[in-house]
Length: 324
Image 1 (cartoon, rainbow, N blue to C red):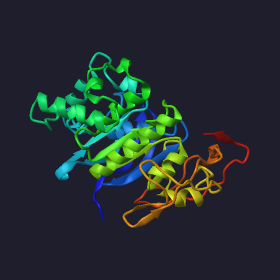
Image 2: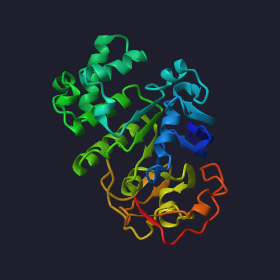
Image 3: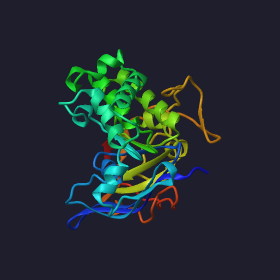
Image 4: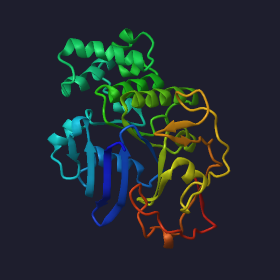
């Protein structure tokens, strides 16, 4: 079995007396693609920022977050000094954010920004090699005339092209873990498929783990092997994508059992996708309903994680549904 590149145990995040994340457990193995879904405000992005060590100072994390990079290099994120976190980010774990225009420096040419992450972590011998490698990465993510694109500023590129630059930066140092926080939300449908294809091919080529945060269930069904469902700051269900979508145990899990399977996914030509010998069927987007848990049963009594027990079944209020 592959080693874990990410292991989160008993993560709590609070601000003052208000607890925002409660008892979050999750793991991602090398080469594994894991989806993290849930309604807005359920704690998905907060979990990602906790893993990156990017929480605002007012937020207090507790628990354990371990990132394992190349050569078995471990970083215990909670409580780590900023120097260690800065060395981890961009090298062992990287993140593709939702809005590329805010992720890129508007005053730097995009080629320099791709080269910078390699020079900071000293994964290339000098500036000349970094610049050449940056152009090569921009070419691999599908930017036309990569050498010319490297000299452009972010505002001179389209939204899809800017997101390709962000993907190139994220993959520049061959990270062990890639976190994608709704990377295609701000893009049109055609460009979304192209960016997803780049991300999937990039992590497969590097045998990297991926944590993919999204509202789009069809994306999860096509690119992920396991999925975790968050609600109210907790992981309320976890398991194989097909099992969670077709036989959900929790009332906060999207009702997708009636969704027909799709035939393709990013970077694939059809049929089911296999990972480590397991067949992974694909499902199309569900009807769009997300059942809400009644206030009296908002917090399940047991942890749901890959290495924990599934939460006990709860009765949901039939009068409340939320559009996801």
